[in-house]
Length: 174
Image 1 (tube, rainbow, N blue to C red):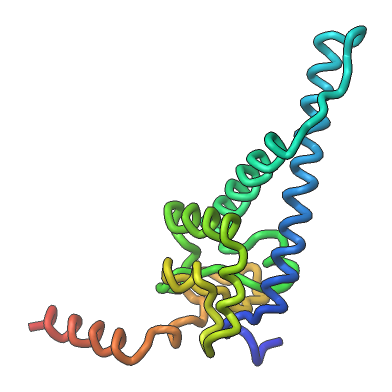
Image 2: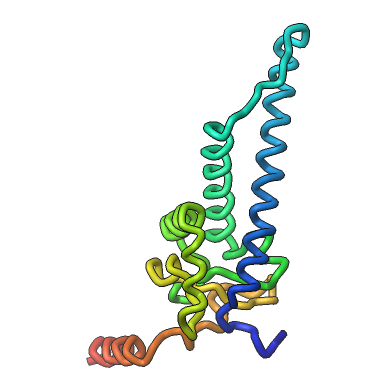
């Protein structure tokens, strides 16, 4: 596993992590539904009938829960439960967990355009459409206690960005 530490995650690992996360979202939705049932029963136990939920209510609720779950996890530790189980971490171009706005946009695009993950197959850097657009990456990172600043992702910066950064540093010194 150490050989892969800090390297971009592949499609299989990312897909399995996404399936685990979909399960987490389904469980949260089930718990929320049970909570609504409990409140309705407590308010009027005699006339209580469980509400029938159609896709018009379930789909938006699922999207909302998924976006909230992904956003909080990614901007906090860079990991969802699925990522934690598979040793993955979402990072920004500086090797840190994405900021709230980036995590939110990434979550929305991942939920609404899940097929963007297939772009991982197209390049050596294994980045989804969302990663390319938002300058994020998903890497293998099995150390749950590593500080994000020490994440081994500095190699992600291409030679053109590295030379720009070095030129900027040289310019600032003068």
